[in-house]
Length: 123
Image (cartoon, rainbow, N blue to C red; front, side, top):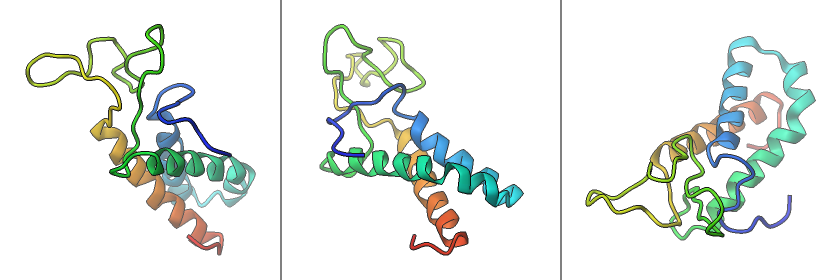
């Protein structure tokens, strides 16, 4: 997929990990291997995106940062401008690492490993 600029998300920062996680849950529940085979390249690209974003964060988290003053301040499901703030009420500046996104990323990576194992591929 190539290098992804830090924090760049084409949509929400949570959508890619959720795509992989929900696909893994579908695969686990249905054993629909033909469908998983048909979207396997997209799943691999999605995991590559997650890993690239994680590698750019010193803590290995999936984070985002607003690049321009005209862009969305927040890239998660709480995307209103005042949705992410500190205990004192001040707005959080990027990079932001939403806790729920870290959970989604964990589920995505463990789910992808399970799907790869089912396919006989290296996790």
